[in-house]
Image (cartoon, rainbow, N blue to C red; front, side):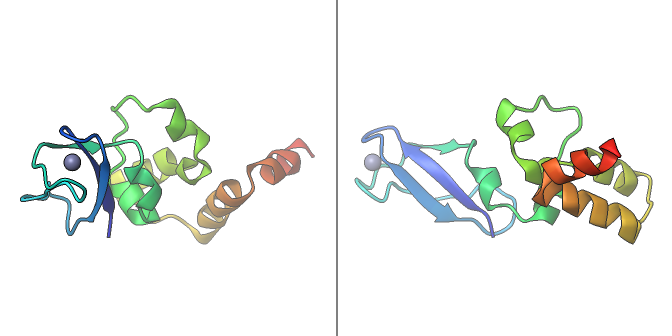
Length: 114
Ligand SMILES: [Zn+2]
Protein backbone atom coordinates (compact mmCIF):
# COMPACT_ATOMS: atom_id res chain seq x y z
CA UNK A 1 0.00 0.00 0.00
CA UNK A 2 1.55 3.29 -1.02
CA UNK A 3 2.18 6.07 1.45
CA UNK A 4 1.63 9.55 0.09
CA UNK A 5 2.94 12.67 1.69
CA UNK A 6 1.18 15.99 1.65
CA UNK A 7 2.40 19.45 2.49
CA UNK A 8 0.03 21.75 4.30
CA UNK A 9 -0.45 25.19 2.74
CA UNK A 10 -1.22 26.77 6.13
CA UNK A 11 1.56 25.45 8.36
CA UNK A 12 3.96 23.87 5.81
CA UNK A 13 4.16 20.67 7.81
CA UNK A 14 4.13 17.31 6.05
CA UNK A 15 1.50 14.67 6.75
CA UNK A 16 1.72 11.05 5.57
CA UNK A 17 -1.26 8.94 4.61
CA UNK A 18 -1.68 5.33 3.62
CA UNK A 19 -3.59 5.32 0.37
CA UNK A 20 -5.70 2.42 -0.83
CA UNK A 21 -5.83 1.88 -4.57
CA UNK A 22 -4.49 4.38 -7.04
CA UNK A 23 -7.02 7.18 -6.80
CA UNK A 24 -6.39 10.50 -5.15
CA UNK A 25 -7.63 10.25 -1.55
CA UNK A 26 -10.35 12.60 -0.39
CA UNK A 27 -11.08 14.37 2.89
CA UNK A 28 -7.49 14.62 4.01
CA UNK A 29 -6.53 17.18 6.57
CA UNK A 30 -3.22 18.29 8.00
CA UNK A 31 -2.14 16.13 10.93
CA UNK A 32 -0.62 19.17 12.64
CA UNK A 33 -3.16 22.00 12.24
CA UNK A 34 -6.22 20.37 10.63
CA UNK A 35 -5.86 22.53 7.52
CA UNK A 36 -7.48 21.15 4.38
CA UNK A 37 -5.31 22.76 1.72
CA UNK A 38 -2.85 19.92 1.18
CA UNK A 39 -0.55 19.46 -1.79
CA UNK A 40 0.82 16.05 -2.58
CA UNK A 41 4.58 15.68 -2.59
CA UNK A 42 5.47 13.45 -5.51
CA UNK A 43 9.17 12.84 -5.10
CA UNK A 44 9.15 10.46 -2.15
CA UNK A 45 6.21 8.29 -3.19
CA UNK A 46 8.24 5.91 -5.33
CA UNK A 47 10.29 4.84 -2.37
CA UNK A 48 7.33 2.98 -0.93
CA UNK A 49 6.28 1.26 -4.13
CA UNK A 50 6.58 -2.45 -4.62
CA UNK A 51 8.35 -3.62 -7.75
CA UNK A 52 5.07 -4.50 -9.49
CA UNK A 53 3.57 -1.08 -8.64
CA UNK A 54 6.76 0.45 -9.96
CA UNK A 55 6.33 -1.42 -13.23
CA UNK A 56 2.64 -0.67 -13.62
CA UNK A 57 3.14 3.04 -12.99
CA UNK A 58 6.14 3.24 -15.32
CA UNK A 59 5.47 5.47 -18.30
CA UNK A 60 8.12 5.23 -21.04
CA UNK A 61 7.01 8.58 -22.49
CA UNK A 62 7.31 10.46 -19.23
CA UNK A 63 10.42 12.48 -18.52
CA UNK A 64 12.22 10.87 -15.62
CA UNK A 65 13.92 12.90 -12.97
CA UNK A 66 17.58 12.33 -12.13
CA UNK A 67 16.44 10.45 -9.04
CA UNK A 68 14.78 7.86 -11.24
CA UNK A 69 18.14 6.91 -12.75
CA UNK A 70 19.94 6.96 -9.41
CA UNK A 71 17.53 4.39 -7.99
CA UNK A 72 18.89 0.96 -8.90
CA UNK A 73 15.42 -0.54 -8.40
CA UNK A 74 14.46 1.15 -11.67
CA UNK A 75 17.11 -0.75 -13.63
CA UNK A 76 15.51 -2.94 -16.27
CA UNK A 77 12.11 -1.38 -15.76
CA UNK A 78 11.96 -0.30 -19.38
CA UNK A 79 12.86 -3.80 -20.62
CA UNK A 80 10.25 -5.32 -18.32
CA UNK A 81 7.69 -2.82 -19.54
CA UNK A 82 8.42 -3.62 -23.20
CA UNK A 83 8.10 -7.37 -22.57
CA UNK A 84 4.83 -6.87 -20.73
CA UNK A 85 3.49 -4.68 -23.52
CA UNK A 86 4.43 -7.33 -26.08
CA UNK A 87 2.74 -9.99 -23.95
CA UNK A 88 6.03 -11.86 -23.47
CA UNK A 89 6.68 -13.54 -20.16
CA UNK A 90 10.20 -12.76 -18.93
CA UNK A 91 12.44 -15.83 -18.67
CA UNK A 92 14.04 -16.79 -15.37
CA UNK A 93 17.43 -15.86 -16.81
CA UNK A 94 16.14 -12.39 -17.67
CA UNK A 95 14.63 -11.97 -14.21
CA UNK A 96 17.79 -13.06 -12.42
CA UNK A 97 19.96 -10.74 -14.55
CA UNK A 98 17.70 -7.81 -13.71
CA UNK A 99 17.68 -8.80 -10.07
CA UNK A 100 21.50 -8.89 -10.04
CA UNK A 101 21.65 -5.50 -11.71
CA UNK A 102 19.31 -4.03 -9.14
CA UNK A 103 21.02 -5.49 -6.10
CA UNK A 104 24.61 -4.97 -7.22
CA UNK A 105 25.08 -2.96 -10.43
CA UNK A 106 28.90 -2.89 -10.16
CA UNK A 107 29.21 -6.68 -10.06
CA UNK A 108 27.35 -7.10 -13.34
CA UNK A 109 29.52 -4.48 -15.02
CA UNK A 110 32.60 -6.46 -13.90
CA UNK A 111 31.08 -9.70 -15.20
CA UNK A 112 30.45 -8.29 -18.65
CA UNK A 113 34.06 -7.07 -18.89
CA UNK A 114 35.31 -10.64 -19.14
ZN1 LIG B 1 -1.14 22.35 8.72
